[in-house]
Amino acid sequence: MPTHRKQQEEARDQHSVVDESEAVLRTENVKVTYGDTLALRDVSMDVPKNQVTALIGPSGCGKSTLLRCFNRLNDLIDGCKVEGKVFYRDKNLYSSKIDPVSVRRRIGMVFQKPNPFPKSIYDNITYGAKVNGFKGDMDELVEQSLQRAALWGEVKDKLKENGLSLSGGQQQRLCIARAIALKPEVVLMDEPCSSLDPVSTERVEDLIHELKEDYTIVIVTHNMHQATRVSDFTAFFNAEESDDGSRFGYLVEYDRTERVFEDPQEEATQKYVSGKFG
Amino acid sequence: MTAVTSDDRSEQDVERSDIEKATDRSFIWGTGILAIAVAAVLLWIAAQVATEAMPAIQTIGLDFLTRSTWDPVDDIYGILPAIYGTLISSLIAILLAVPIGLACAIVLSENFLPISIRTPLTFLIELLAAIPSVVYGLWGIYVLIPFIEPIGNWLHDNFGWFPLFSTPYQGPGMLPAGIVLAIMILPILTVIARDSLAALPTNLRWGSYGIGATRWRTIFSVLIPAAFSGIVGGIMLALGRALGETMAVTLVIGNSTDLNFSVLAPSVTISSLLASQFAEASGLQEDALFYAGLILFAITLIVNILAEIIVLRVKKY
Ligand SMILES: Nc1ncnc2c1ncn2[C@@H]1O[C@H](COP(=O)(O)OP(=O)(O)O)[C@@H](O)[C@H]1O
Ligand SMILES: [Mg+2]
Image 1: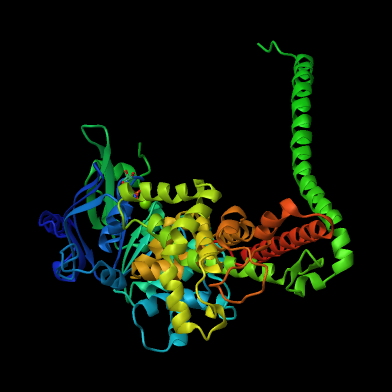
Image 2: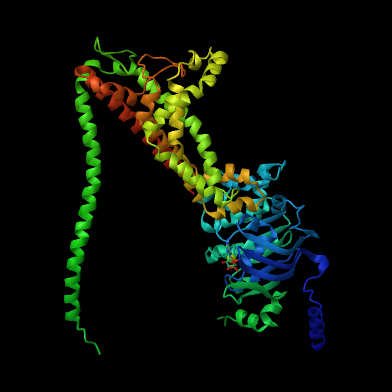
């Protein structure tokens, strides 16, 4: 036991929680500002392949902001500036040669509030495929994606109905199906269960477990139980007051989920995961 | 410790609720009466116009709608040319204004232009609505009609076989009227379409961009369909305005009561017919003009009902 502990300690000293060859996404000193306000500072972390990585922390600490750096969605926000490097398989996503639109086709995203398009369930799934120039069998793709999102059984008889007519939990699974219909490598999820009831939440969590075989998942969550249930790695972010009184977020601790929850190295993490947070 | 007994409290309640009840009651009554008054005015006007039109309705009947002579000398009245003119001039206006207005709405609601350009642009477009319609009419006569002469000539020379362009360009007529109307309805159309696009949740845009859609794809496949009911509402309001617009049209359309299918020839709309003839009308002619007004009323009512139906049938986002 003590030797085991020692080995782990050493591993952490090298600051490589994730074996580098396994990393799909990597950030180096990422800093994000909205206009003149600093939102996130000095984030360096590796996201391992075919694992679920959870981003946790109090609200306003920049979890969503970081997630949007992984698919360059921050580009769409006026005044948002990203500094530092974000690598996706050794390509710097923020280099001028990269086309953000094609990045988003490889890295799908599921949002906090379900946002199906006001189109039929069928068209919601095929939209992404059409955008992508998909040439295969659409019916098959729709069935496959809905199967994977555990929604097929509920909607197979009403594919022509508007996506908005589904319940919240079904809408969110439709959005997940829409994202995986693109056959992306990475799926980013921003608090995907925060507007769902417990039953739907459980279904989405089961789904995340299954999807991990084929996809790399980064999930933002408010719910610490959820982080322990679904994730392999956890990054804890905190917000700090800067000199001029504005708050910015930074990465406090990043490790295997069980270490973050059972043996956190930082006091702030300890407080947060035990629910004693300010 | 408890200075207030239950008795005191109930007295207080009674006192306060008396005033409250009174204001409440008068407020409900007041707003109710005002609302009913508006509806009553509408019905009263409709009834009044119908009464005035009654002699003409009895003498002419439904022939009024299909006859194309307007002859005060022999007291023969038909408004087919005016119905045609009303519908076609509004149609031209809508065909021109919808693509331009939608394009403006997209530019103003998306962020590809910096806000420092968008704000003055919005203001200028809204300012179009502030120009009095008689000014539009005069501008039509002195600027637009000479300006589009080459276009009119070109249309007639090349497409003269087509009924819509079968006469030479004669200056005042349907085409300039349609163009003036298009400019006049542009602001309302643009503003409503922009507001409905801007009101869409950011989430919806991100959903589309997030799966790798381009901006154009997002606008045309997601945003415009999602804002469709608002946009159609705007188009219908604009159409209502175009159908009833009087002053500017009267000045540029030429007010010819002869039926002519060509948009290059002078024509007449129901409202320009009323405006140009009412001053000298008497007897059956005056009744016929009221009858024409009633028909215009009916046309705008139908347009509004259609608009409601379309808006209701499209699911709002
Ligand atoms: N679109 C935006 N425009 C301006 N500031 C923003 C925007 N989105 C987030 N922020 C700011 O960035 C900080 C981090 O926000 P966010 O990433 O949403 O945090 P979290 O997801 O952890 O709650 C907050 O201070 C927030 O006010
Ligand atoms: Mg967030």
